[in-house]
Length: 374
Ligand code: PCP
Image (cartoon, rainbow, N blue to C red; front, side, top):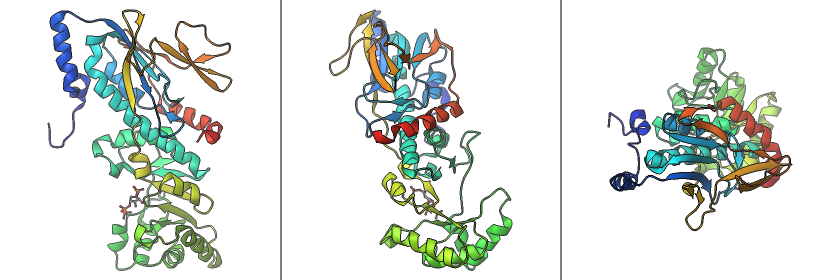
């Protein structure tokens, strides 16, 4: 271990970040000369919502590249449902057994974040949503969090380590306001000193009432005011936002937008989307429940086999006229059906690398059709 409690890339790549039982059973199997050819599938039996967003494939491909395995998977950014295989690995068990921990870790976490981001984007009904939650997770995974949130559909991310291509978004911390003699001094300093590309969004809740600070911030050149009202002051947040809007309007600032943040849940985003102009969401995206993917043998030495509770045989998921059908891979494909699992790695060689922008487009293009599905 180095300075921080972080497992390095090299340890992950060589399979050293694993559950000890994998290493132990591989040793036993080596001694016995047991190493069957298996096909393993990754599925989630249940989800917190009717559907999820598949994410994390890029890391899995980088992990398995060079191993003697074939990998097929849904493309990143695919919508998936419970019991659908999202990824399959074919190879000799011992050759990849120790990687299960990292494979699932990559997929469970990234898919959880991307799924939450997509559901929050839907809840926002067209209002921009920004990922502000990298501070809620270990900094070593900030890039993963922001990438998954971006694929899920947020409009920007706050962490400077977000992968290139993701627009950075932020306003100002309360600490900044407090470092000046009064709020006006801080807002004016920001208006004059921040780069020209930085939106003049002034934090308007540090010491006084939001309606008071909002109008004063508007007078200092705010393009928007951020309300990050502490929980202890939120008697009726909707009434507070409406009052701020009213006072901005009657004081001659109808174009000043209202940016909402601070512990927002998906439900709150939906509840305020008609009166707030944009949302900064932290924990509800970054701390999203992981997807409980598991990785199970479904075929061994060419014979369909699965532990109880799991469905045996290698499968393909088809999309047919907006419906999803999962069938054994050998069964005739439904007419007009498009198979969603496609080859990614053949004999250790990478065939297709996911592209972040394509994954995001895939999610966004599907979201409207999913409104009725929760
Ligand atoms: C932070 C920031 C956002 C919050 C976090 C997003 O708040 O202002 O509103 O994360 P959340 O949705 O999990 O709350 P603070 O910690 O109050 O930081 P600051 O005073 O610097 O704005």
